Image 1 (spheres, rainbow, N blue to C red):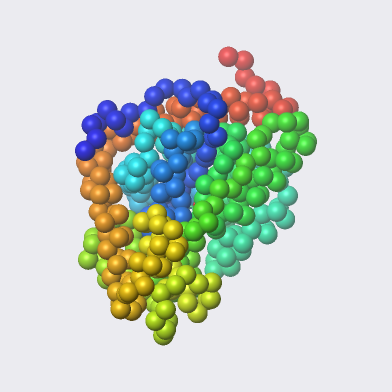
Image 2 (cartoon, rainbow, N blue to C red):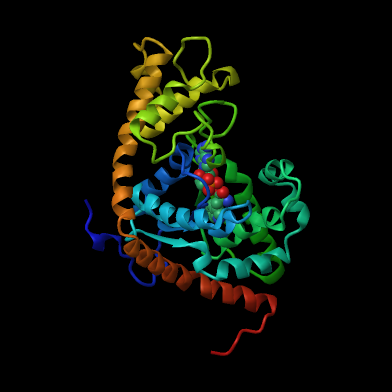
Length: 350
Ligand code: AMP
Ligand code: TRP
């Protein structure tokens, strides 16, 4: 167990010569295995090599209806979860988006130079808005808020799952447009997307991306806090195909088995050939599922235990998040001033 002091964050960070990483995650719904394998696990694994900012994007969560008390609780719970999976406050700045005013402010300025057509083309917007009768402005504007998040930190790399690629591309377009209009201001960020694991599929339907929004549907997702019995039940019920070949495959018909192998590969960190060799003598899909469940349970059990410890002291968690916001503001407030000055706003005299 780590001591309490190990979750303190140091004061103002200096720009190091390490590449700067920024990523975000929404405090909406239960964190699921796709979030972990496609994004969070990699954030933790690479944090010593990079200078990192990880943001709990509560303002993004408001773009779909949220019960206020649930949003409130999930925000803290997500902070504990990020620490539990290994985000180390000595190596990474962890903070809540709404604690740093520059994010919402700069979103407005970027809105005023982002063509609506760029936003209407976003596939996530098209998917999310098509099922709604009345679409709120924030849902369309969501990628501009995300671009501001990234650009405020002169970010080099944005590690995300595949579904966010288009949003990071948009952040690049916005950066280039601003630089063109007002002179060199922003670093043009690059998406960092894992070759394997960037798109974990639902266990109940391997044609559908695993998502927090469906994690309440039985058999869809493994949630990070699920008990071992529940994890086993979900994975044992996973949809596969009528064959018996345990190999990686791009064939949509075999997406269920491929998804199980991808999960096994990312959890164990083994090469694809070693993964297939592990299953060369397997009796069939039943055994594949049992062994995938076993490695997932082993991976998540210590995370669940660490999460429970962290949630037992929310005062400490809140203190840590306050320090994180200070460090984030130390970088983004001066950047926001530069942006305001460049577009012609008068800064208040201090
Ligand atoms: P969100 O749940 O939208 O806040 O996503 C947080 C991070 O998890 C983002 O980087 C997403 O791209 C990533 N992510 C979400 N779902 C999946 C999935 N099914 N497979 C891989 N990565 C995912
Ligand atoms: N839109 C991202 C998602 O839903 C979350 C996010 C918000 C983000 N701001 C970001 C990710 C900045 C990377 C960088 O997953």
